[in-house]
Length: 357
Ligand code: 13P
Ligand code: SF4
Image (cartoon, rainbow, N blue to C red; front, side):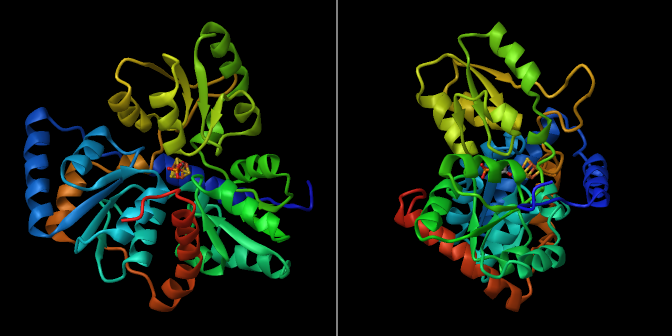
């Protein structure tokens, strides 16, 4: 093992797999129940002056509802930016916990709800704040850059927060200033950035259980079967999968590729929740999920994040009714964590990477 990498203990990997296996899926609903729930949600959003802030990986009906009611469907960078600039009194974040925490960090005056506060992320669980703080303490001369998919406590240790929508630009900026970097927690995204920028970073070796499952050998075979397809890969995927990509980037970049490239067929290596937006923007193009099974192993998450899947119409309606699943953050930690998040947003706005209201 290279000294520039910090492996996570096997025990933690076991806990991540257990949490993923136990993530509860919303119960199936009849068409009539769905319709009633949607009407109730719309009414409650108005009554509470609330907006839905949804990620591209959640259920298609939640994405549609967010758009229909003046909320947003976006990548994690634009979700943070939208929440911070919103005039609503309440935000309902349909995604995973770190997205809710970022929204609350940026808007402490707003009530921030989530349909299920237990919707976590393997990258967040795989980077406990105390262990990460100890790692950073060994390298005090390094700038600490953490992915948005981390807890508020980890963000409070960081100098910069990044998302896959701005990580390359921010690391290039830091490299130009001669900074040495600690990167956490996604090992593959970190490695991709190293290759793209030519910098070597001290990397925390966390992983996304969804993107880690895409298989290079099977993807190569699929490419051969569809020589006319372009391959789109999220950089949380392994290096061998990224190497087969025509386009590598954040969810927003991959959606943009489907919409703007002249090609008619795409093999997509990311959560298939993204197909809702891709189909909306390019209804006639053919989308194929990249392979997650191999001859020897079967997929567990199978190209769909078990924690994103916890968001449903029923728990969204319930949380708007009861306002009980609230994100609360200790004020001292929030203030510390805010520095690195605001630094990211200021940089992204200045570079035109997100909209400025
Ligand atoms: P994006 O920031 O690209 O939307 O990615 C977030 C995420 O969790 C991907 O797995
Ligand atoms: Fe985390 Fe992966 Fe789920 Fe994204 S898809 S929220 S990185 S576990």
